[in-house]
Amino acid sequence: MEIMQVQEDLVCTRSVKNLEGISLRVMKDLKGNVLCASDPVGVGSGKWVVTTSGSAARWAMPNYASITDLTIVGIIDNWE
Image 1 (cartoon, helix red, strand yellow):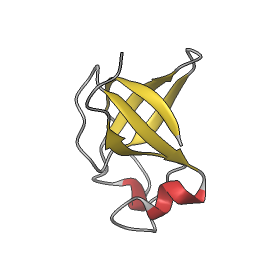
Image 2 (image 1 turned 45 degrees about the vertical axis):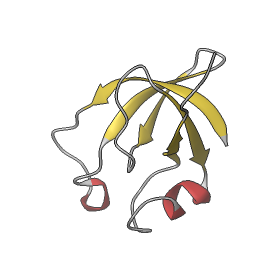
Image 3 (image 1 turned 90 degrees about the horizontal axis):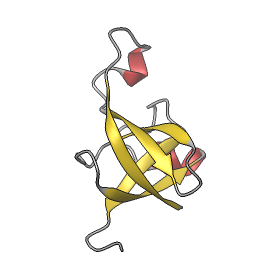
């Protein structure tokens, strides 16, 4: 798991079937890398979150068939 910050929403007008209806967020990790994550939690921009990657990212989604390798799994309440 990693700590990342949500930058903004990412909107796709077309996607594969198992990605339809999934909220996507543009993320920045602690090294400044920009990534895309699925968001089953419903996080707003600027929030710090905990993410999981790889096959664990699919298990964190409501539907295991979702195509993702980075998923937001928690919102950090206090991060300095």
